[in-house]
Image (cartoon, rainbow, N blue to C red; front, top):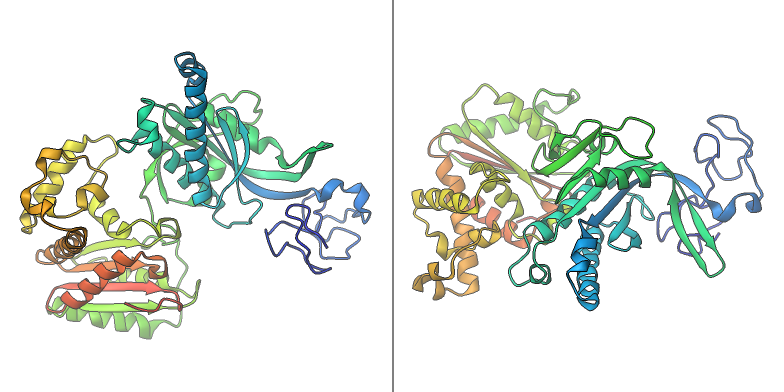
Length: 460
């Protein structure tokens, strides 16, 4: 059986393509259920299924999809102030940056429509976290144009604003067009709604529908835009603006919330509780929880958090992410930003002052570290001291790791610290180096490290 999407040859009874994940068995045209091979009637609604491939044009299939639509604000006005060649170059830069962000999160650029770009998440590759990937791609696009890197191609063209709209729904995917001009496209209102939501996102805004936001829980910080009038969309659609990541972290449930009861783990919870008692006596502890996905690693750490909910302590919780494998120290920079209470609208100078004050308290000269650069805080060239200039890149990296280590350990002087870092199988090498340093230095401190990873993680 040949896949209509990528043309890969698959076994006769395959239901999904082994190369791209596209469905190979046509879904029921009435309810969208995908029947088992050889079925003549839909097992869900009883509708007679067509067995003649000629009656199913190009094996079109229903499937859930998250659509992202982005465009450049006031592109017409920008074009009028540039030579045609310059505007073409700007458009190319814009498309390249947007496509890079989309592909970084495994999205598929479906169409370029002038300065508009339509992307799919969840097709042609099926993804359980398609909605989260789409939102992260949208934030990456916004970040590239809202705060362009000094000397970058974007900065050369002046201030460029973009907007992003995202919606999730069921679509029909199949071949469209005729003759030589044929391509695989998704049909349905999902793409139209994403386009209309993009129109209300505002300059450098990322807006998503309620349907999309519901799929990502509290992973992002958002604000409601109500139910604006979306041209051509009949049903009322509630829209939210995504401000940033940093709400509830991924799959981790919150204490005493909707987490299911845990049975048969009394021994493990008791062991964690015993280790915490040693921490209170000044004997720092490190624990690694290893197991297959879904076995309950996060649930164990949640049980410990519930045990400690009435005891004075400081909880630091973060984790590695498959989206941030190339971002050095992301879990600890996330903790530092939250610890310093950075806000999106805060002046960069105020952030820098707060960072300096925190580092001064632990005897660290920020200029000898890479923290300002890693936190994307601008520093003046004349601020670079002779000491810093004398340090090579490896030395600054080492001092950055030690500065974050000292910061965490200093917090334990005021009250016991529980540091939870999950999903180490996705962690970058610098984060692992920092964790190794913490493991080495935590004995004798009132701090406990609880780390989790899948079995393939080789250890620190």
